[in-house]
Structures are given as structure tokens and as C-alpha cells.
Amino acid sequence: MRNVIAATILALPLAAGDARAHAFLDHAEPRVGSTVQTAPREVSLSFTQDLEPAFSGAEVRDASGARVDQGKAKISGSVMHLGLKALAPGTYKVNWHALSVDTHTTEGSFSFRVGP
Amino acid sequence: MSKFMLRPLALAIIVAFVPLSNALAHCVVGNRFFPAMLATDDPCVADEMSLPTVQYNSANPSGREHDVGVDFAKRFTESFGVVVSSTWTRVSPPADAGTNGPIAYGFQNLVTTAQFQLLKDAQHELALLAGVIVNWGSSGAAGVGAAPWSAITPTFYFGKGFGDLPDGAGFLRAFAVTGQVGYEVPTTSLDLVSGNPVPQNLVWGTSLQFSMPYLKSSVVDLGLPDFFNHLIPIVEAQFVAPVANNFGNDFIITGTVNPGVIWVGTYFQVGVEAIVPINHASGTSIGGIAQLHLYLDDIFPTTLGQPLFGSSAPMKSMARR
Image (cartoon, rainbow over all chains, first blue to last red; front, side, top):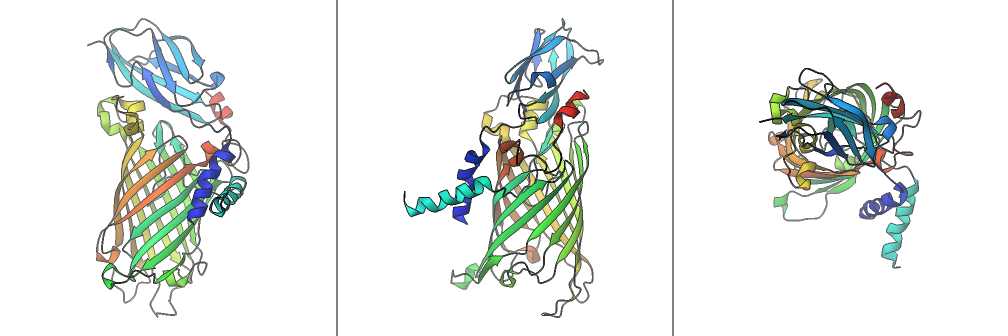
């Protein structure tokens, strides 16, 4: 049994080749759940895997549900940038969806706050 | 190369090209990821493998029991999958018996589970699953307790994350619960060896889990060291109650409560739990369980990680956005 376990662990990297995985949100700027004093000009999302730009994106909405992002999300590798309009103090919600380069889909959301 | 290296290497080559697997579930529902659990099952079909699950428990009346298990889960379609589970058991004399030699060892009965995904609601982080567990009688060794009869257990599973609570709920949004309930029907009503009736059982389990990955990505990024952001503290519980054909026997609910933690990586997870019996009939001391669980859908995304019939079709779902 010990040989089987050792063999399997040895074998996985051989058989997996260029393995990739689900793209989960690793970190964001502004930080998830944070309060920033100065209104950010963009939201930056860093994922755990590279993204397929054509099928990945994000939007930002204010407390009333109005879109406050502008322009199309710019994606390079595993990082997504999304421009913002001038933000007034308040709470904002970021909704993102991602297709990793191995075709796994993920989605998520988080909030940040501008102001004191 | 020594013969000690040749044997694992030969096995490695075989394993690399033969689709072995025992999967429980890589279960992503919206923001929520439900990890594969050690005592109960998560509410998703998936392409995954637990290799191995190692367990020590004191529930065996003959002595101390050590188990090494393998589970392989494979999706046939996007919504239908099968899990095959096999466990090797070694029973040793009780600790106070003064000897360490095994009483018995061998495989438990083979267990298969057919599962159908009823629902995945991303917005409410809700997953529902229906399954039929079959314990194949006489496929294991009688000396380690494998029954000569089969048992069929229709089972319902659910998972619910609390991420849809208002933002003001804060840390509570990182919690999730899972559960399963099944009705076990043996293929015989009488044990011909002992003369005792074989009861039909209600089998149920649950888990409460707190997801640090969810906390960081969806609630608040506390800036903790990366290791802590991969942890999911969890408490599982599982119970069995004889509810029919139990004539002459005491009505005793047996079960365990398992507190532990799961570390979740990109391609695998590692979990450890204590096994705490709820009464004397469930065990005489605290046991333990540990598991290495592999996400085959991430390790082999274009081959073994795909359903046998049809693809995961992510492009179609993304195109609806």
C-alpha cells in the first residue's frame, strides 16, 4: 500500500503535464472589505491562475445599484484592471467572473468603502 | 537504480496512464468552495480522488482498528457521477491485551455511490445532490467485519454557504453548513450466523465549516500569512440509528463528532480530524483521521478532469453573461 501511495504521488506530475486550475481571487486593490480614504481610480483583481480575457470581466456598483465602473476590463495574465468613475464616499460592490485558461469558470464579489 | 526504487517507479508509470481515481468532490458554487470532507460527503459530483484516507478508531468491538481507504470519483456527465470506495482494515487486540499482533486484516466491502446533481444556485451558495450508496455484500473479508449481505442507501445531500447574508453579518458570511441523510436497507432481514435481525438504519451527518479562503476573497482581507488563508476549520458529525427490523435489540444511536481542519491548495487538500465517539457503543476512545485529497479536474483539466460524455461547457455558461 505504501508503494502505491508513493507511486501515485510520483506519477501525478508526470501525467498532469501543464496542469492549471480554477482561477480564484487571490487579492484585490482596494483590499476586500477595506475602507480607503481616497477614492481609487481603478480596481485591480489578482487571481490564482491566468485568465481568458474574452470571457472574464467585472463590474462595480454603488449602494443604489448604479454602475460606477467605466471602460472595459483590461486583463494581463492573472491580473484584471477595471477603471472607475469619480467615487463619492460610500460602499461599493465588485462583482467579477473569470474563465481560467483551462476553461474552469469562477465568480465572486466583495465590497469596499470610500470615506471615513 | 535499486530494486526499492524500481518498484515504486514501475507503479508510478502505471498509475500515470491508468485512470485510477476516487473522487469526492471539488465543489464550487458561486463564491463558495465546499471542500471534500473526511467523514461525510460534499454536495457535488466531481472528478476527484482521496488517496489515502487513514483512520484509527475504537468502534470495533474486537479491538483497535486501523483503516486505509481510497475513493475515486468520476463524472459521467456534467450532472451524474459515480464514486468507488475501498478500505483496507487491520484489527489489533485491545490496548490492554498485552500483545500487538493483528487479529485480522483485509478489505471491507466495496462501496459505490451513484450521484446526481439536483441544483447549484450560485447566488445563494446552495447545492443539492441525490445519491444511492451500495455496499456490496461478500466483496470484503468477513474477519474485519465485512457483511455477507449488501445494503442500499438512498441519500440526499445539501450544502449552503452564508455568503448571501448582508454585508453587516461580517465574519458570519464565511460559514457554511453541509448535511446528508439516507435510509439504509440491507438485502437480508436476518443474520443467519448470529440469528439476529439486520436492522434498517437512518444514516445522517452534517458539518459546520468556516472558510478562511472565503473570508479573504469575499468578506475582508485581514492580511494574514498565506498559510492561514488556506485553512477551513470544520466540525463534522455522523450518526446511525436503527429504525426498523430491530426486534430484540436496544435502540441505540451511534455516531461520532469530528473536529478538525482542512488545508486547501490549488491541486490538492489535506485534512485531519479527531474522531470523538458520542457514547460507549460508538467507541471507547478518541480516534483520528487524515486524508490527502486530489482535485483531478484541476490536475488533468482536459482529460480525466472532464465528464466522460459531454464537456463542462464553460464557454456556453460564460456566454450568457
